[in-house]
Length: 115
Length: 115
Image 1 (spheres, rainbow over the protein chains, first blue to last red):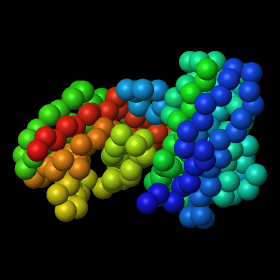
Image 2: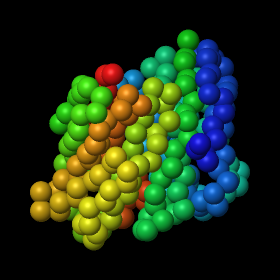
Image 3: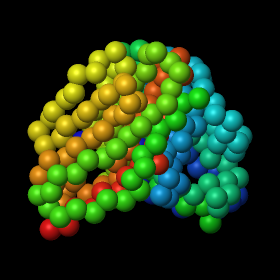
């Protein structure tokens, strides 16, 4: 069983809605990630938090807003999404963002559908 | 620039056959990490192995084995005596030490093991 927990597993939202995806890990990891995966494609990095600070933003549109309240939690706030944003959103964590501690463990993902 | 190529899009085998999934990578970094992940239909990316660039020792874990060859920039994955439960999409990924934990994924190989 994964030690990275994501909620909700499935989310359907309208283009005017505001919703959030949540991620939690209890492995003491100090780096957390959001990846987006479209059908039949590999995951693509969106954001990296290292020691609760945003360290990488892969030019993600502002309708996606990440938040790291503490070292165990990572949220992704969603607002005014488009149907093309429908995808599997994967949260991940690692001991560190570089070096020997960067084995990245993924959660089960949140399946998002924008209607 | 970094790149991962998995030339096999789909592979279909019959149970108990051996199967090798190919992975070729490109990087200019001298310190990097290679990974294999398994993604069943449920969506979770399951970590299988990580290899450091300075450790070319091959590894065996049960029915799984990995062959890392820096001379050919390859990190191939073999499943011996395949089982139906091995059916999944397998991703090879690269992380460079100065990229803050960013994983570059190959396109994935969909393995179907038939009874």
